[in-house]
Structure formats: structure tokens, C-alpha cells
Image (cartoon, rainbow, N blue to C red; front, side, top):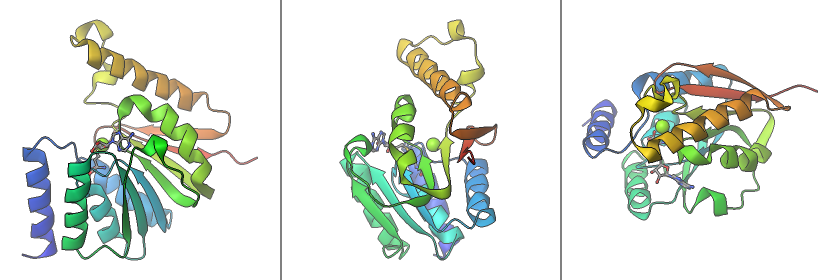
Amino acid sequence: MNVYEEISELKRDALARGIPIMQDAGMDFLTSFLDTNQVSSVLEIGTAVGYSAIMMALSSPNLTITSVERDHERYLEAVKNIKRFGLENRVTLIFQDALDIFVEEKYDLVFLDAAKGQNIRFFEKFSKNLNPNGAIITDNMDFHGLVQENEENIESKNLRSLIRKLKMYISYLEDHPNFSTTFYHIGDGISVSRKKLD
Ligand code: SAH
Ligand code: MG
């Protein structure tokens, strides 16, 4: 199998098992962002089985990635997948709840793709790990279009609460004194937040 077939298989298998990997359009956006902005280091929150980390690493030969996952089975699967693509020298996986880790290093990009209700906490925590021109990208900002949906039309209580939290995150980003954020309706919705120049 060549690398493209390996990727297709990884993707097909993840989707078949309901693992919420990044959509193609979002993935394209992210990899061109890495290229355009000459990103050389990424901190990813939410590895799942390593799909987005592998895609980023393959698209950008000098990139190093640290990725955090709290689910043990997924973490173990990601470890296997990273090896399968021979990326273990550039992708470091951490098995822990991202809210409990202590990260000292600085990164060009922080990619938030974990529990959607915790984005504000992730943002507060990991914005301290950005290089001066760094950015924070968040996935699933539209959440299958439900963020734009009327609240009464969302039947599940848990889902309503999650959407409310995502809206709070949007307001948080819009009102942030030190970051300016652009929202893109690409893939499942992506936001790019950059530090304001002082
Ligand atoms: N980035 C992946 C998809 C991630 S899915 C890709 O596109 O291929 C979201 C993952 O975040 C899930 O596997 C979930 O277990 C993990 N997650 C959720 N909250 C987390 C937390 N607080 N710390 C670490 N991982 C978390
Ligand atoms: Mg996602």
C-alpha cells in the first residue's frame, strides 16, 4: 500500500467507527495554513487515532507535533498509526487530560480539537504556549450547522448545552482583548485566533 492508500484506509476505518476526524475541507485549510504561515511546531489537543496529526506531519516535512489524548484506547491506536507512517520522530503523543498537563514549550500553532464544551478553558490554558506570532485554530465551530440553528429546534438537552457553550466560546473570542479571531465556514467550521500586536 502506498501512503495515499494507507491514509484512505485510516480515514475510512475511523469514520466507520464514528471517530470524529477532521473533514477534508478543514484538513486542506489546516495544511495550507501550516504552509502559508511557515508553521514549524504544533500543539494539538485531541489526537483521537492520530489522523489529523499524520495529515499535518505528511504535508509539512519539517513540522513537529505534540498531541494530547485522554482516551487510552484511542491513544494506543494513535501510537500504532504514527509508527505505521514512520512519524514517531516528529509526532509526540501524550496520554493525559489536556486540562491536567503542564506544558512549558512554545508552539507556532495550537490546534484545539477536543471536548467542545471546554474550549474556553483550553484557550485560556494554551494561549500561554504560543510563540510571538503564533495562532490558535479551533475545529468544529459550526458543529454540524447547529451553532446557526434555532435553539428550540435542538431536541437533546445535552446537545443544547454544548451548543450554548460553543456560542459562549464564539463571544469569548469576539470580545477577547488580546486576540483577534476570524471564523471560516469551512469543513465543520474553523476559527483562527491571532495575538493582537501591541
Ligand atoms: N484531531 C482528531 C480528532 C479529535 S476527536 C482528528 O481530526 O483526527 C476529539 C478527541 O479529543 C477525542 O478522541 C477525545 O477523547 C479527546 N478529548 C476530549 N477532551 C479531551 C481532553 N480534555 N484532553 C485530552 N483529550 C480530550
Ligand atoms: Mg474536529
